Image (tube, rainbow, N blue to C red; front, side, top):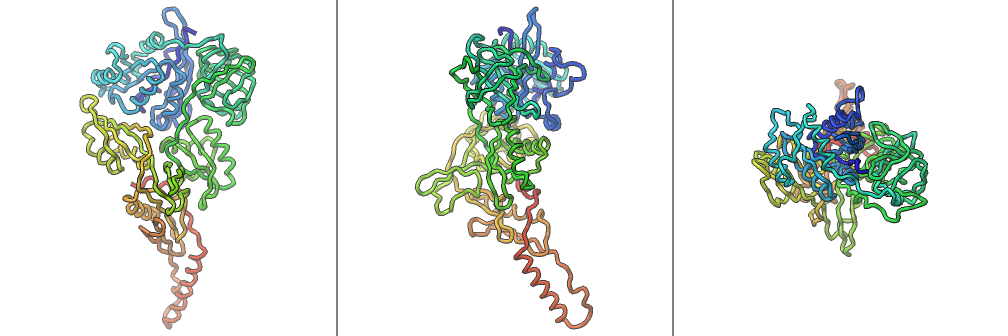
Length: 595
């Protein structure tokens, strides 16, 4: 056990984690020949296309130093703020972390956020300065930032390059010397912490775990404490590039278990596995329950696919524990699910994965956040969907969630960033200079204002140089109103939103204009209205497609033409009464990109 090292890689998005992980695998000869490719651990097509890590990936490497053989368990983690739950689970299964900082970009918001998470879990931190081969690298300045942040010595910072392989042997040596061996008692009752799981259509559910105490062997009768279900360990093994079966997984090691579990509810991330004969009475502290930030309805395009969608979401939840969902129905879209996501990118990725991995065509409604609604009697109701709002006469006050956001940027972009935050009803708390011309700005902003397009606009006004990190802070009272969109007087509940009173008119007007472009013309006039209660605040009309019924009349009396036009008018009136207007999927998506 003294020769096992468990460590993860944490960094901001795009600071070169996956490339550096490739070099570690190459230099320890874990992956050789044809199997070696760029981003070798990112096994999803989606990850390769976008160049981001979505899932954390575990892999075992062997390394010899001074004549001794060591086992290194690496967990590569995502860098985007929407996948921070993956990072927290990886950190719980490790004793050390490589903190990677891009020598050209310096320390970013997510670097700091992930670092604090690692320090809270008492991990040993190895600072690595990556991409020093770039012409724009500023190694000395960035080293100063790291020293200021970590309080370490300059000699402890390793200069490396994932591209050229420089400094990789120094990193491997530091992992062996700095990261402590896992603590645990091989003789104690078995305790394994589940930190991830995947669904395999042939083998059932495969759980990944870290053995904290005891030893798990093939054929053991084991019990999952949270669900109190018992299974036979049909196969246990360690995680190399492919799963590699072995007779036992010892204390401190990371491995997987296959026990023929078929239903996803029986495996919970953060659960503890123990033996049935000699059970452990205590549970390992798992991870805190994840709190979704953004809610949106997901509906199948064909209503018969409802059960298939449920099965697909359950399988996806195994692989991504931060997804939450519950059934709901909508007058416009039929039966579907209200899903909770950690952010807009997370929502986009889930939608894409449903399409690719399960062939599910879905409609996603406008994303919104959860509000606390207090009635006149003082009862509190949590509302995730504007259609769940009680009658306005019953409401005493509505509280909306606020986040504590930190933006790190160059001083050149302070003006535009501040006006963006103020436009989103942000409250400036403080600003502090980190080093040179880099500044960190702290804001309290309503979560509802940032879920739609804040991150994209922040990136464009700062030319990609601003980094953004946030956590839920508290709920505050706000003047909010429910805005409905009506088509020919019928409300479309999927387009209802809760917005601040000051923004209602401009938002409603923009929404009506956008829908006018997207809804196809019919044989009759379509009125698009934005309304708060009974008061209409904006309106657009889609003119009817008109057929020239008088074309066959040439000469003769005007009354013949008038008769035909009157007949047409009657027909249009009748058509308007029974005609229905379909809202295309494009319209739901366009509402997200209104600005």
